[in-house]
Length: 203
Image (tube, rainbow, N blue to C red):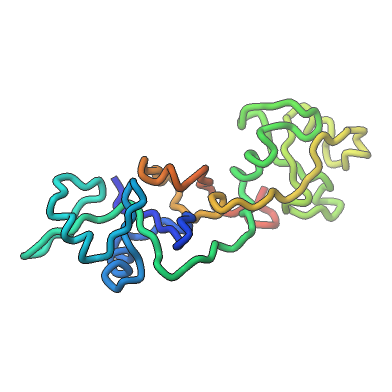
């Protein structure tokens, strides 16, 4: 099990998955507090005292000659109330989620393996690789469209390309493949694991 810690701002919005060493430094310096499942906050000394009574810690312990201290699973920053950059990352996972796994030309819902990403305005005609020009397409519609625009291929668009609305949980930076801990779920709605797509020549 990973010893990473979910880091919240002081308004309890999840903003980062942090290395436990960094969190313990913040805790020791008074810049962060441990948050338990009942939303009780503990400073370093309070958490150190409580740790003496904890037998099992999911994240493990730091042990010294004179005491042990549990590595927390969730910590809250005391002075930071901002949110991450308010732009939803342009990733494959976010695209599939945004269009709900539906082909934008026929409107039907498909499994991931039966969809691809399509340039509405083909690259050969100057189309860009961004939120405003990429949609999901099933293979039959993609073949019918070819390297033409929807109008040229006589296709009706059920969903026009657009950038999704921002939500804090979408922006949470996490490591690819990281398992979401039960103690994090109340703070996290949904996590997106993929890295950001390159804007050109990546699809």
